[in-house]
Structures are given as structure tokens and as C-alpha cells.
Amino acid sequence: MIKKRRDDCHDDAEVHEPDDTLTMTTQSPHLTRSGLTAAQRAQVYRRVMDCLETLAGWSQARLEKPEVSFDLSGTAAGQYRRTTGGFGRTRHRLRFNPYLLAKHFDESLATTIPHEVAHYAVAVRYSRSRVSPHGSEWREAMALLGAPAEVTHALDVSDIPQRRQRQWTYRCTCAEHRLSTTRHNRVLQGARYYCRRCRDLLVRVKSRDP
Image (cartoon, rainbow, N blue to C red):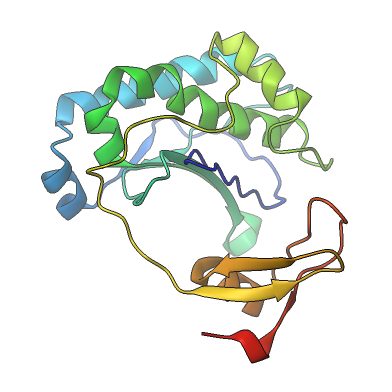
């Protein structure tokens, strides 16, 4: 995910044969308010396809054409998600923030789209390995795309609608952490988060709940 502090989420999954077309999903309220036009959305799809073509050989596996949606909100510019559904079917999804795309369209085409497609290609190539979200593998893919390997964006978000989430207190052996409601709910569903410094599992501090 590309945000003021980008957060990339990947789930292990198998790679399947590609579809013939990109799947387009939109949330019309967001698009109407954001001013993102149909022509701009078409440009995003073409940019995604161009990036996929560039990385097709590098990924060492078929890159299934992903679902592309414009439903991301807040300060995040983009996000790649991979999940496994029924019958082991893998779902690859690129999500983009329509507000930021509309406001910073050219820069988003040059940076946000390749950023997320690179995450997708890395996830496919290293599907059986654990790699750093913005490690050397991702930077190599970004270099092939001719895009800057920047982890965070510097886009102006001053007038972008933002959702405020409750914060939940977690601890590791070295510090206290504040997790958003989204991440807290993922923990309740079985996800685990670890401290980047001490590598310890984050544990909820119920006495500090909001």
C-alpha cells in the first residue's frame, strides 16, 4: 500500500493462469466525488497492463491480470492485496485512491501504479519465500519499470477526505504500539503483527483499550 507511511499486505497463495481482461470494480460515490473520469480510469488500466508486460519475464511465472478498483480512502495512494478464495482460487487486487489519483494524476501514473504492480510481481516470483515488502526484490522490479523506489509518497493530502479509526494498544518486549481498528480486527481473525525492532509478537493490552 502506498501512503504517507506505506503499508503493504500480502497473503501466501498459488499463481493461476491469467484471465483475458482486467476486472474493473468501482465505487461510484467515491468516483463521483473525486472527479476521476472514465478516460483517466482507462489510462490507469493501460498503465497497469504496460507494467505487467514489462515484468512478465522477470516474474518467472504468469502474471494473472488483477482486479483493479478505485475504493481506497484516506492518505493511502495504492495497495496490492492477494487472497485465496474457494477452490484455492487466488485473487489479485490493485486498489487505488480515486481522490489522490484525480489530484495527482500524472505523478500517480509514474509512481503509484508501478509501485503496486511491482509488489504483485514480487509476490508471484517469490510466492514460496518471505521477502521484505520494500526489499531488494521490490527495488529491482521498480528499476525495471523505470520508477523511483520510494517507500512513502509526498503527495499533498490536505484536502483529501480521511477516515479516522480508533487506536488499540499492543505491546512487544521493547515498546508500545498503537494499531488501527482495521489491523486490530485482523488480529481478532488470526493475523499476527511483529515489532520491526525486536521481532517480538505484538500482544494486546486490554487495560488500555479505548
